[in-house]
Length: 177
Length: 163
Image 1 (spheres, rainbow over the protein chains, first blue to last red):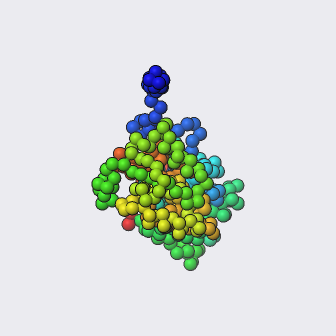
Image 2: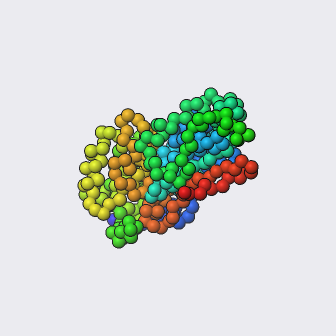
Image 3: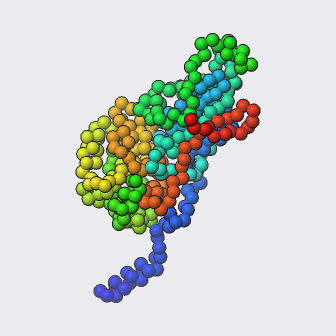
C-alpha cells in the first residue's frame, strides 16, 4: 500500500511540470494562425473588395466628400477568416499573429477607421478608383443600412460627419480640378 | 471604480458559471480547454461551478438568440452581486456573422452589461488566459482604436484628430 503510494509520488515527481507558463512567458501561435487583420492604410486604394467578401459584413464604406472615402472596420465581429487579405489587390491587409484582443470596451478598441484619398470623376463628381476586375464584386459591399443597424453611433463621433451628396456636380468638379 | 471594486470584492478567487447563449460549441470547448492542467486557469483561483448562485463571473459564449434571452436574464439575476460578465468569442462580442439574423438579438451586450470581451473565432486558450489576466489586472490590454487618413501628396497616413 505505502509502496504503491510512493511509486505514484515518484512518477508524479519525475513527470515534471506540464502547465504552460503562458501569461508570464509569451507563447506565439503556430504557422498559419490568423489573428488581428492589420491594415496598411497607405497601400489601400479603397476598391471595396474586402467589404464585398467579408462574411461578417463589418467593413463599412462611405464617401465623405469627393476626395475622401471612409472605411470603418468593426473588428469586434471579425471571425479571422482572412478573406479580405486574400482578395486585397494591393496586399494592404495582412493577418498578423496577434491574438491578445481582450478588452473592456471591444466596440471602441477594435474599431479601425481609415480615410482613403480618392480621385474625383469629372462627369458625376463622385469618388472612383481606376477600373479593375474587382469592380463587379465591390458592389454588394455598399450596405450601410445593415451595418448601421444596432450599432453604436457614438463610435463615429470623432470622425467628420458625412458630406451631403453634391447637388451641383459639374461646378464641384471644376473646383477640384 | 469598477476596477477598485473588483480588487476589493474578488481578492480571493473567481468562480465561473459557463453559459452557452447560442454558440457553435467552438468557444465552449476553448473555455473547457483553459481549465485543463495544460493551461490551468485554476492557478488564478478560477473554478468552474455548477450553479449560478455560487458564481462571481458569468461567461457567455455565442450570439444571443431570441429564445435564450429570458433564460439569460434570469441567469444574470441569479448570480449574486458583485458580478462580472465576460463575453467570449466574436459572436458574443458583437453578434459575429449573425449580428443581423432574424433570430439573433446581437452580442451579449445587447442583453446584459458586459465587463470584458475576449475576441476570437474561437479565441485561443491563450487568448482567454490573457483576458483573465487583463480582468485580474495582471496585464494591460493590447488593443486600441485606430483612425488613419491617407494624404493626397505623400505616401504616408496620419492619425485622424478627434473633434
